[in-house]
Length: 276
Image (cartoon, rainbow, N blue to C red; front, top):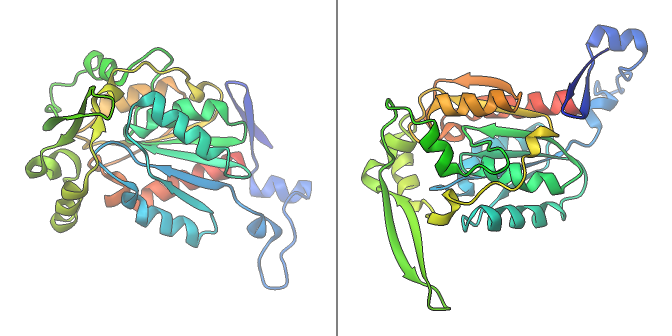
């Protein structure tokens, strides 16, 4: 049996041959299934990022359910890092049993903060995502790790008056430029609907400092989108390596869960197999 230790949490990785010798592999059932295959699996919690909604996880969720995983596709409020992290932490407390958290883009920062309060999170999976350290803001990371090969996002801002009379600022992407910036390898019709249905994010989300860095205690996996135009792939790699994440790379746009759901599902399964 070989083991790996990740910042205080240890996960066992058991080779099939060694497991048989040790008597750890259960005998097959009469129907050909093993006790392992019938053991309850952790709930996979999928969290979308900015300029998106939970529907982007549909193909990934379908594959995971087919493989026996309970799935929750969370509607991220996009109200700010502190707000969204507290919201997710509260939701997770109502999800019984072990959990694997999966965050896309901005949601990587949300799961990084929220998971620190939840004792039964087995793994963090970053999908073309931010993985900030304590004290870092997302805007600061983007400035410090600027890649001139990645053009600025075609952001559009609008203001509104809150019930208390204060002014709020929301940020979205120019629908006409959405596909090129966010979903270049997604079929045009689907990318057009994603542009039309995108959810804006509160501007303050990118200025708030990270309060927790759960990847220091919880094993992590990272999927790098090598053709990302929303977060520079070099920044994704920097954060993943710093977190000592298990890294997979794919030739994909930022919308990797839409264009490559099989790869996303496989990375989640890697996290499950290593931490069960």
